[in-house]
Amino acid sequence: MGRTRIKVTAKARRRIGSRANMLAALRNAGNPLLVDGNRAYLIGTDSKGVRFEMILVADDRDADSWTLIHAMPIHYRKNW
Image 1 (tube, helix red, strand yellow):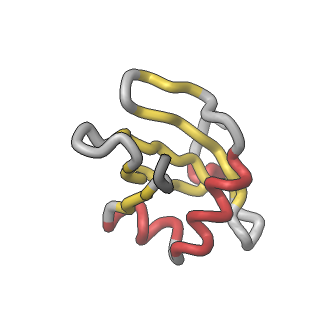
Image 2 (image 1 turned 135 degrees about the horizontal axis):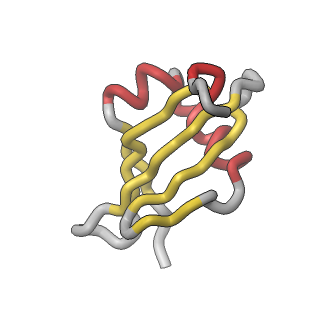
Image 3 (image 1 turned 60 degrees about the horizontal axis):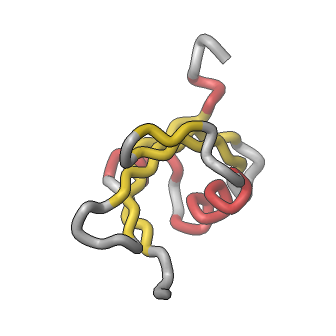
């Protein structure tokens, strides 16, 4: 079994900042809140203490690869 690889889209990278912040938020997220088909919805706290809503999509070509397509601080959401 190999390591899971996570790719990041440019839009998600702009929101979450560094790769270290992304990894911290993913580690702190725990289990996904929802798994819908090939998407996983998570909320995690980065190394600065900011909570992020994240969406990961499974890569259909590689079983050990995911792409972070959405990362947004939850204080921007109106319904939380």
